[in-house]
Length: 143
Image (cartoon, rainbow, N blue to C red; front, side):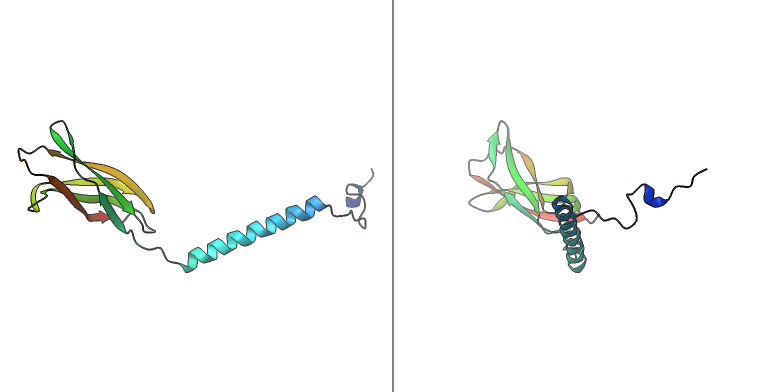
């Protein structure tokens, strides 16, 4: 029985093959990717996440059949998500700023740095004055 030497499979122990340009490029690219990954991880560890920062943009009411529709865009400009966001929308008489109807809308989930479009619905009122809308965020759950 003959015993094989480890060098028999690899062309000899002392032999060296020249490094190709492709091997050098692949090694450099891998090194850059590892360095970028480590840099991102260090930056993320050094910067704590900011809590959810919720803002809204309320559009003017639109008449749709027998109701007013109030489009609202809810923004989360923070680093953390928000759950069960409660948006309070009020329908007001434009001249007197009197609240004539109000509604709460719940947004189930609002991820970090995202927005959601919601619509407040109100029964059309038998008034002849112009109406406007306003709103605010009343609260949310920290997930």
